[in-house]
Image (cartoon, rainbow, N blue to C red; front, side):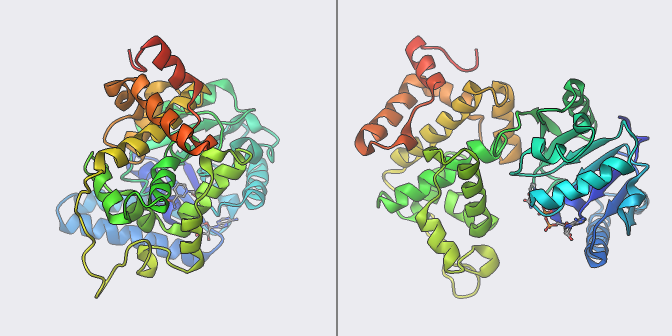
Length: 387
Ligand SMILES: NC(=O)c1ccc[n+]([C@@H]2O[C@H](COP(=O)([O-])OP(=O)(O)OC[C@H]3O[C@@H](n4cnc5c(N)ncnc54)[C@H](O)[C@@H]3O)[C@@H](O)[C@H]2O)c1
């Protein structure tokens, strides 16, 4: 896979056009297809607008911007993607619809072309099963906005050819991205390991440990760019709730990922976040400033969220979802965590984090605080995750 190969992108929404830009920046010819002509027009106009702004700010030359735009063309039917060596699908998150597209693609492209999905929550293996050659299907999970976020989770399915993972890692590096290799498991690395950032914060609010602005301030205080409630408002409570619910269901109702009733009520009331002007916080005119005051119990708040995040990272490592290096890279490069969670765990040692979890489990009797066997092992042996 080199940059003489044409790249196909299916879906000209938020992710599709971002991925098209990344591939074109790397020198590829890119063909973007969407079933809605207006989506294609809007995406191309948006990219042109972005290039105009960058030229105006002297961040790139006009010639450079035109060359980039010149490498991206649009297609009115899927057949026009036939010459592509790699096709990346970024359409609606629906297994049946994705399988239909992959089934058609399978017969269109060359036998050695690679078919990738940008799915966030579906099984790559299930999507690949729609193809006659599932060995050339892989997950390439970009983060939003794709041109700015470095992380790409590279996810081979059960039937993916052994060498394709490494080939895609090399290609993503050529594209200037930070790829990590992970198993085809629900939420991959980031959307699995990050669940407690939201879930445990919601839980602490429910227990009356602190109010939402205080929990946000406490976590910002240790280097998270945004607190959990402001971040849920930015992502959209409907989206964040749906991701949590899908990870929980996909893990056969694992109690550690149980969604929050507080967030469900928020969604039911239409308080979706910034996009509706009201979420956990209020936005826009007359909303008043959100308190930035760091609460007195900030340390306890941070410890509880961190213990849960570290436990998730340890458990992902225990279950060989990815290497320890990739688990830490994923959280710093995909969601801007200030440090990798396993490196963070090492600062106080596994014994400390195990004690936080055991105390919570003893108090509540709940499975959600069940320590990962690997965290326990590191506590018992006194060893670090990163040696
Ligand atoms: N938005 C994110 O933050 C984000 C991040 C990572 C991954 N993803 C994943 O990327 C994918 C796309 O998400 P998005 O946010 O860009 O969606 P979006 O709604 O912005 O865009 C989807 C586009 O796909 C088009 N489409 C739908 N069905 C199609 C079909 N059968 N053939 C061709 N085009 C079709 C739609 O017209 C639309 O323009 C999803 O799988 C999502 O889970 C999203």
